Image (cartoon, rainbow, N blue to C red; front, top):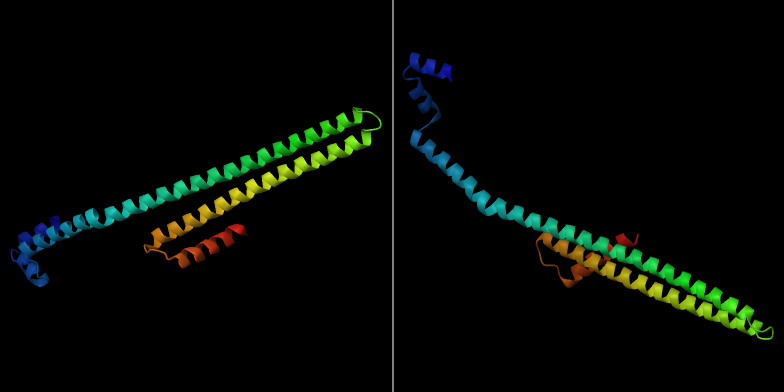
Length: 180
């Protein structure tokens, strides 16, 4: 800065020559600076701000989807533990019934043992059937929700409305990847 001032003092027409050489006009330069800052303000207010807000909303939706997925996984784990408890209780019931049958009269011992074993197998079969139904229901619900989240996220990221065929294809691809 000092050099410029010293050069301007030594050559009084140097500033004028510099402005002529580069075509620098004070009023135009100030107008361009004002225009530059106006464009920056308008872009920040009406372009970058809404885009950043939309991206933040998408992040929040993805986080909510992940939390829901964790909740569903937790329900699946609870269902499995409930199933294990039901099977254990069924086994205890079966053992109890078998012991009662052994304590019965000698003539009915064989008949009672067979009834107890049959009942235990039925209880186990029912418990297993209920557990399998719960697992299938939760797995189906998880896949459906995952497919919906993938389709929704894809639709939001691409910014276009997906057709039923697009959603079906995306769901099938996502479920194939999840299944592996």
